Image: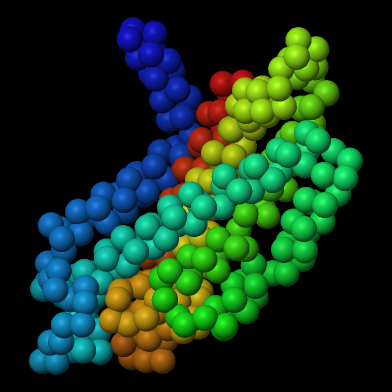
Length: 284
């Protein structure tokens, strides 16, 4: 236990030397906690749904409504916090689906080489050849707009990036001495991939996962902005920006506040990802 605490203190010291990383951790931590405890910290939890309060519609930010109210009187701060909850849930699900698939494809192609590499990487290249947002829009254009279909569309376009990352790492490591030694003593392919190559690939994979949280939220918000994602009255940051954009500059808070919310989560995850990358590289 003492060694673990010492290692933890050393890791925190290295992480905290980068002020931006600490800021990113603080931003992400506040957003995650706010999303988890949204019913407790939001002033009007009922406004996360289809509630109407026409008498308070279009009020600018004030003491009662910190970020103002929308076109039907719902508290914008409440809806943004619940929008964070939905966005983080989508990011976690998308990464949980895409990372195992992409890493498995990349490791298999990078270690096996030959025909396996050619087939798997050409399939990956086909997906990478299409811009991610365009591919997601094409998929969502064929399906009814919903949270489930949105997660499916983003997942289908996200796994190739992990496949390409894992492939490049596996191909660079397959000639390393410890991999060759494991093969000489008769280790199975699964053992080499999971015990020798994958642990050395995890720092890069974890860093990319942290950075991708913000980008998944951005893509999901873009789909909602275009009307292809989560549908009202469910609070979604992208659809709130789209709704408010038509009322600029008079009702500026309708678009600016959700837009800043998206900016904050992207900024926080990028700063945090940079800190995690520096920490893991220092531990090598």
